Image (cartoon, helix red, strand yellow):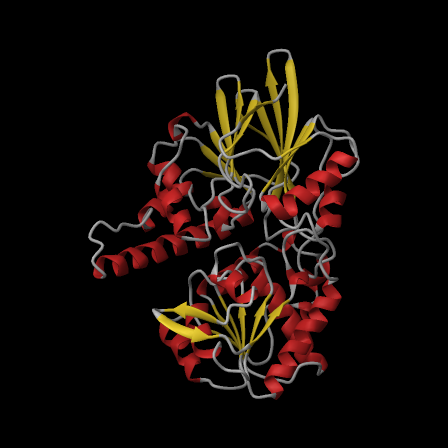
Length: 456
């Protein structure tokens, strides 16, 4: 039995973990590397393992850094089953089709610039074919995913349908259990249920994105958001909120609606300028089983309806927003500003001291969002240098990732043979969390990319 981390090892993106038991192999996640041009090369380089020998994939959730290389896996010979919750399958379909479309558009632009060999990683047909391999699994149900391997999914509270996965391994007389956290959400949020704590297990593979810090309380973060919105709108500026389409957009809409209904925020038109977020909202409506009971039953808590909300699906509608010079709230992807419609809105608003840019999620090193957050005075958008004069707000209490106390609560006090930390920046959250876990007497390890660890 062994574990090999082929992504998210000492970094945040590219989650991909291979578990071998006897002659059989299972992947947990198969995500894209994201953040810089080097990530594109890593994605295009292919896999260091043989996709044809993988028996199954267990998908924790539908974020691109966890599912984004699945079409490549299938195209390169994978012929097993991909297990995920029903909500994750629906969201992954939206995410992968969007990724394929964006890659095709980017490759076409590169060819127009003279890069004759530019090709997308995969196309829409590849993405669609991937869904021939998906199989839905309910929270709490046990399913045999390969000989000697049984998986059980539990709610991770990160995005709709997200899961942590307990994998029971049996090889002859040896039996071990290894738990993969996936991405763990914060408890006490308005939409999703709290994450289910890690069960008893020999090994735990857990994310460490915010292992070095505590988030502000959600209530304080909502109050800061309301203040940022109201302040900007009253000085006749626009508010641009780069947002992730899955869960973050819905949660922020819910908070904006509460602020405007209560009078805390000056009334203004709100634009959800993200076809993916709009489609994801429809998926939320189809899966109330993943939501907190008050949200799914009480209309006054419905985060998907509010006065003045405009859903902009078409490119023409999105472009029209750039003629609004004052008094609008615009939510657009991508959350890290490494692509999508938000870049156009930044180009039209970053230079204005009346406007604000409000970041409500994690920004990986190398992304445009991180550069703005870190205080860049100028950024390049569409080949033009744009001065950063807008007020920049960073409100981390909206993060869909657990902070240090929540991570430790999820892990619990049970003894473990070893805790493996992944999905974090090594010199920040990962090392800090490792020190805390080690201080409890449990062995803690930060695997390097491609490192094979025997589960003895």
